[in-house]
Length: 188
Image (cartoon, rainbow, N blue to C red; front, side, top):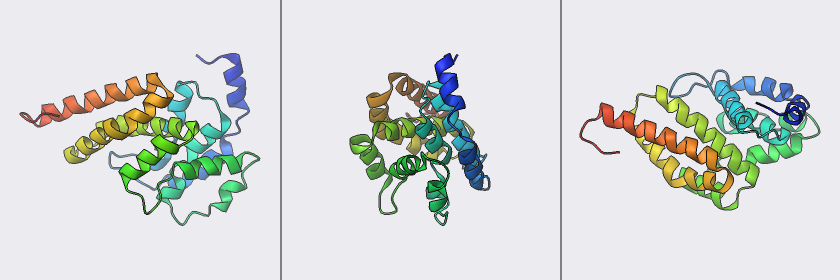
């Protein structure tokens, strides 16, 4: 349950303009079903669940995939939302994978030189993605994504929040059990 202070900070975060902007992701589907807009909202919910009530972090969570998933999106629109939008934009760009970066290089960049907010946002994002793996039927994708989580995202979570790390570990274990059940004889 939120404290009165956390509730007040959440009330004053003024998330509505960012949520409205994130609706541009409604048509972008995900491998496990649903759409990218819901993923943004799930990431926001995970942060709130872990008592992260920093307005810049929460605003960035709502639009963290916008630039990556809609490359033609007018980035200047983000900068016009409110007085915090330059900081929000900076955080979104920090967690946006560059076109010339491999996924491992991207995750290592966040781990080694990302800000604390970028690391927290990346871990919340990965928790959301791991939950949604429960709806994915591509076993190769599940296996690859699970192992990527262990190798690259666990170290990020270790740096910022042991409880989030524990949730990731439980999700990885769950996905490995699922893979073992549907592909007997193969160890995951």
